[in-house]
Image (cartoon, rainbow, N blue to C red; front, side, top):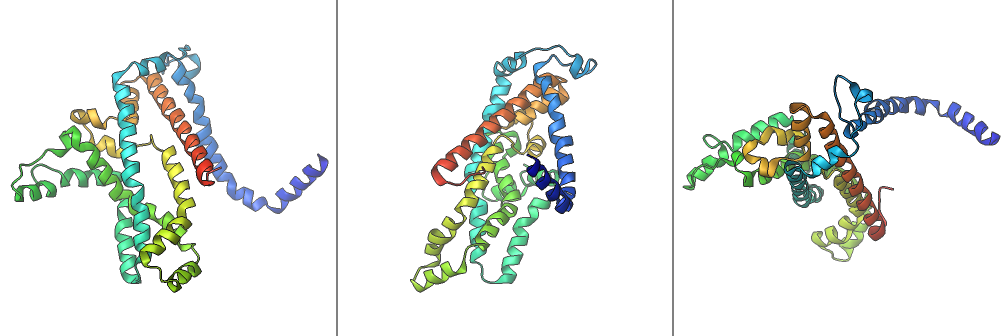
Length: 305
């Protein structure tokens, strides 16, 4: 034990600069992630802002029973899973495809220009993205309805129809984030040994065969890790974009857990019920990421831990 303490003392003295650099991150985690966990007990109390957390009486699992009996909450859970699932199915492969396409572009000028164009939407504010979407799908002056009118089709009020909300939301999300997300896969592709491609060329392999036989297998660990992270965030649907685009007419398909929490907590003042919904969301997300990691570890030998 004494030898270990001596070793730790020498280690800290030698590497103290690294720990000083790490200190702001540790403080950030404590202040913004761990300290707020104290407020999770609101989900188990009849919370009153006048009594505070400590003075509010315990309610046990009453708020969770209320949530599970609420048609609005169950609808929000269903919509969250549906939107997240469709975003995963249609959105997750797009950055991979973009990265593969960029890797095949030989002209550096064109490649950099194309990358800049597809990266740009990521740096645009969500409010501006919502404004662009609303303008584009406007029934009177939107470019989509103008094109439809040229084809002799009557204007469609896209953002007031429940069946159109999910395609619009998922499509705009892919447009905004796919380009920037492809950077991770481009970095993984850059790590593939060029000798593998040279050997494939000697053997007469086509570009398509090299993608399937060399590039994709080489970046598969990165794909699996990103997929696990994406599954862990499955319930974290883009709250800002949803709340900017949805309206009561589209609640049927657009109301998600986070917007339910917003309405119940901030608008309705039911902080305890909103906290219970948030805790439910966090627990389900935790179970999802653990399950995804176990499956990936068992079948691909690649995992987060």
